[in-house]
Length: 375
Image 1 (cartoon, rainbow, N blue to C red):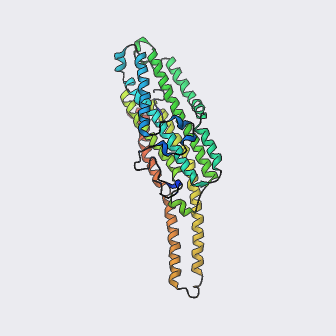
Image 2 (image 1 turned 90 degrees about the horizontal axis):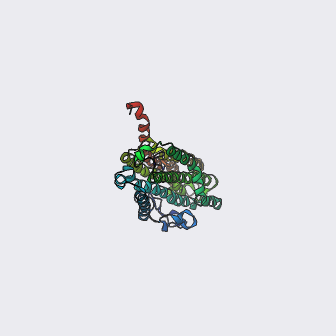
Image 3 (image 1 turned 60 degrees about the horizontal axis):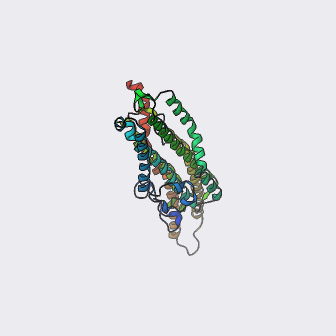
């Protein structure tokens, strides 16, 4: 796809209860295993979009590659010069590129939903209200939202074609715009729309995450919340998004290199990256603030108990050693809370930075290269 060129674009402690089963997704064994089986996700049937999506990674790959090949076969039928078509680098790579768009959207939708539900299972508050909005984000309304977001880019794409700005990408330049070129524009438009759908999903889950963190609270004492990492699914949302963006960046880079694309081909991916980072920063900050506030309150309470023990007299019949053990226990708990607070979200933050560093550096180099080397 030219104008946008492409687009797309972010182990839980085991317990006996369902809410703390090991997460199935990017942190189940391999950090690049996105989502393995929709059947293990009990909420999948509750959302409209899930009924249209493949239920496992292999099935998703086969389905989306089949769609890409079908688009290629249609182009082959529409082309007048079959030999020129078969030698066209643009059309050689389009099946994979279109499949990459679809698979990236799949990578966002299913794990985002599962991670969000896993987080809500560990919380209490107006969860039903929040889940009702989740059905809006994942329902037929999402198609309308994606279309609205895509309109400016689709208009620009059609206008560019009508003005002949993509002449060099026509199958046979001398013959002018042909049916196969119009089909190419339709595929690029579809890729833009898939981009916009991903943006709608991102915006929706950013709002849902903010609402959940603001209006709901985690169940249990702060020590239980931290030890079992009940907050972690919220952090994994952005890690999942960054993993999906890294995957699509690899697809986009291969497309740009092979089909001789330009910086325009990274616009959609860059917008997704920006939305992922700047959109999920407020929820991340709010989550850290809420957890740190609970940690500080718990630390103050433990400190008060320590001070009460330290200032009191040893009761009759109680040896001093038992008092020392109680003091040591409280001091250890305070130090443990301090360490957990310092480590809160650091691993996920490093994971996001590492995943987004390569795309960010590439964007920077492509932007600065004309100024540095004049090419």
